[in-house]
Length: 174
Image (cartoon, rainbow, N blue to C red; front, top):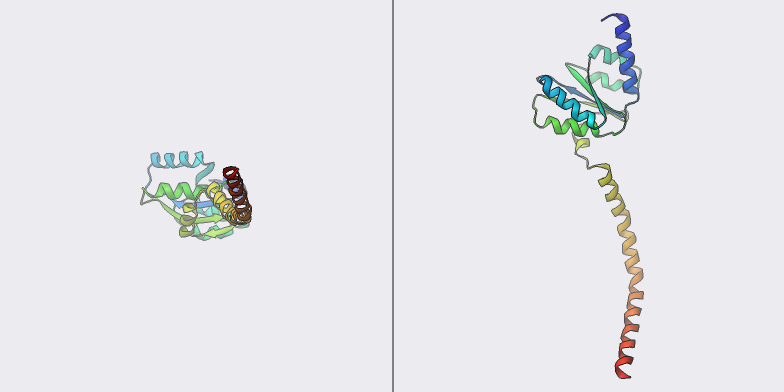
């Protein structure tokens, strides 16, 4: 690889990483071409780009960026999953896919500029979808308000019940 090719590769990788909301590093040893193709297809469906990187070039590419902490994890065969949209998409897809492939290893990554260990990536992958978390939050906020409405409506319901009983009593006595 010539100097111009190296510089172009470094520049392209730096550009891809600069717009990333999350990046997850993996060790792909022991995977067949068919398995790599299957993984890339799954990741592409989640709008995640997956590429094999050369460690020396990747270290140079991340050196002066907010992802500089990734350099420590760039050892051995490395591939990187980059997402610009969904923070947890790479973690979820890679964690799910790696459950059936013991040779596939998640090395770690960076999410929103924060260095993540493999355990952190697993925790992130176990999170419920965003919609479920928002629904839980809405339920948590709504529960006390609904309780307050029920408490405040209690006397009104009691008054309505008493008035209904008075109406019934008058109808039967008249």
